[in-house]
Length: 309
Image 1 (cartoon, rainbow, N blue to C red):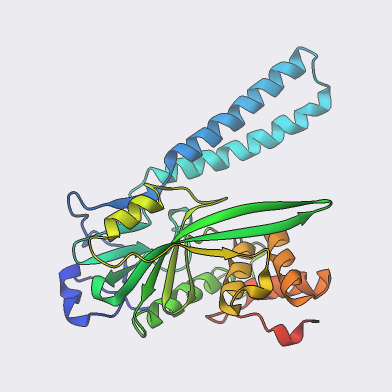
Image 2: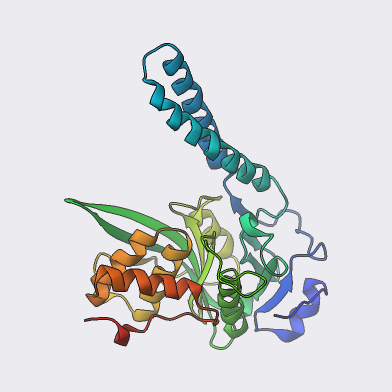
């Protein structure tokens, strides 16, 4: 991964290729240029809700309304509260941004502000406008069986379609960054590789930024982002991907969805759509998901030939 420190204007002779660079003060935010960040309000509401729950349970126990074993719930709430509070404090930092719409390029921060302490420097990519073919919103619908019922939820992303060859280095850099996090400095596999990855690339021409979902809430929203980007590139039709019919999904989309769900800690959802697509057993699905997030190579790919059809 190259470390470039020159001002953004110095990259104009490299167009239309996407350029990787560390997040540095050499890239001041132009006055009036749109910037999109993770929602601080969402974290604040969650923090207040957990703290209120702890206070309410404590009062109910002391008044005799709830039995003494309810202290366990209070303890859990008190453990969760500092974690949410820490994320909220970090969200107030300058590192909390995902997309900047600058006059000469779109700037994307592909490492979440929640994991700036990971391997290597915080990294951004500079996507010149003439490297972008179009942008569009992407709505992914996921389904997970829960006994006799089925849970459905959606994730909304902003997708940049890049010109062929423009995003090859970025594709490898993103997957290598995700792979590196699975291993400690001594080369051993980490016990937990659950992390927040707001930027994904199903292939080297599609750069996808999560704007809304279970773990993401970017402000302003995807519609405002499309409006800001319309001044610089073509806006395409909305894209809908329904994982309730996994056999109809292109394999690279399916592979990226399984990886993304697993990395974010949604292992049950990842194994569920894997089984629906391949027909493999629960044990095979679990082992495949664990192996997928623990591989050290760059672009991690499921091998369907090793799974029962």
